[in-house]
Amino acid sequence: MEKLRTIYRLRILRGGLLLSIISILWGLGLFVFFKMFPGGMTSHLKSVICDANGITTEAEMDVIFCKLSQASYNFYQAATSAVILGVMSVVFLLVIIRLNGNTQIRKIISWLMGVGIVLYSIAEFYNAMIFVNSTNLSVDSTNQWMLIPGLILLFCGVLLAVIKIIRDITEPVGVD
Image 1 (cartoon, rainbow, N blue to C red):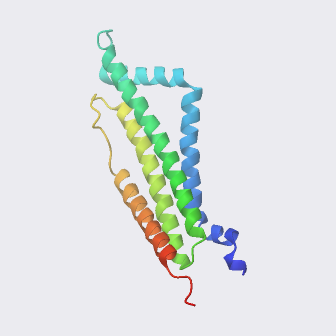
Image 2: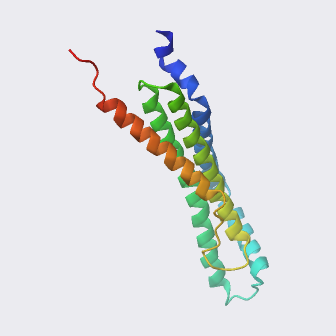
């Protein structure tokens, strides 16, 4: 009876659940930081972009504003994806906690989703930082070395969770 309680099952999935909650806090922390210091961030980004590209005249300022808006969009996307994917992972983990079946599969799902979300969130933020400090003004300056493994782990975790949920829901309860 003790092993059927939700708190016991929650302890089993604590690794992936903790990583998902850290991802949510990371995204919310980025939102708070950008809301608290909007002027400082903008002036810093403008000076970094001007120094990196050698722009000194007012005629070239629309290029700076274009890159500045793209950089702010990249930071916003990094924060948003961390929060949304973290919440999605927590919801999936809370659903699979109450399902019957193998505990190892639930642990695997938990770790796959947690590590995938953390890798993806770090990669999104890293890509935004690389874009700000790059010398070219194109939007295609992205680094995929952490993004793709994070997405693969996240996809595998979500796929296993959906399969487990569907399998346990469609399983007959008992034969009368």
